[in-house]
Image (spheres, rainbow, N blue to C red):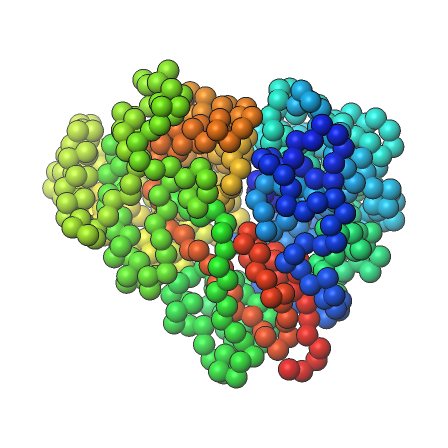
Length: 598
């Protein structure tokens, strides 16, 4: 549902004239009239099949509409079926190049962006992509039947105006350099999709997009196949040359990780991405790996590390005291887990903006302090000191010392151990529930649970099926859970969905922690209004300091490579690995099928 919200973070040249691209800072990497992106093989053969395993936590799907709130859409549908006005390159971080739009013109005052559509652009039903379709897509996404994250992301977009059949102008409520990239990254679909039904009733209607693939054979509960459109309108366009090389992309569905891994070893599909260090180190082996048919590939990237975290829901009374939240984090022994469970494969997440220019270190600069000072009463005092560092148990640090610190914090907050159980003045025990969509993470959470027991805290593990898990997250009905937040090189309005006060009271928003802090709102507003990187960075750093020192999140871990096992006898790939490639999307976009045999 949030594919485009994550995608637009990649794309972000403010020209005073119509241009082939739009760059948030500086100039685009590729000039007008470029032949193709450097990381593709422009002569890649078309044909064959790519067999993938679903990357979705949902065991199956029950709709073809990825934008509505209820239900689960098939994996990769959005990426393969819907084109956008602008498209990003995988070897730069802040530029969008014309796809549906042949050029973009941003007004000198920053209050509008005009897009001129390519006359050759066509939907899957053969009809031209017109300005009215783009407006319809925008109006639908900000309507009542889609994720509230769209409303938050597009809150400063005043509307879309059709100037002529193939020209559309977006109007903005205030100047914001990111907005042309946000609207340029929105999916565009035909007005004919759903035949005029209310959008929440467009469920199993086949999407009418303009992307390189259409829905082919479907076996519910087993797989879905996307079929390449041989008449894809943009197949010879420079931003698409060397991409969409497979005739068919089949996405298989398995009920659990064990079944997926055994199916890979049995040759049932061609590629699988691994997120478990234990599986990668110990269980990715067998006959097909020994013969070289299956290969383990670790592909280095320069993507933001993101902020995968344990999320503490501060709507719960037991988690509203910052000292309690900090104490919970002190009981997590990452160094032990990395040695014993993860085979040393991970680095600790340290903030919101790791591996980007926004990464925060040391003491606040003068501009950062100037932003935070008016909100001092709403900001933890520690945020005015050194940047948050996760607790450690190596290099002279110990779990024992961390637990002593946690115990002191809990006592300050009014919690005392009585008969081995931590209770407050009212006699209430500190008992929490960890919610997940399966039993797989129990092995990782168990050591933390044991450490919390030493403090008198009970953390119970609750596994539910994915549909219920998704529903409970949408309604914020949980104490703690684990979420992998995507990072970005160009933070902006999307952080209002993640941490903004308004989003805290909006079901199905991204503000799972329930953050309601005027200082946070002010930093996000400053970020989105920044006209230069010099204005952006202090606001990013200030936001990072406030969030991390407030202990809404207990940071987990990240990896600097994509771990993928693939069939080297069936698949070929370009020599160059783009630094900002998002795993499977890179494979679907740029790899191709080998001829039969080795």
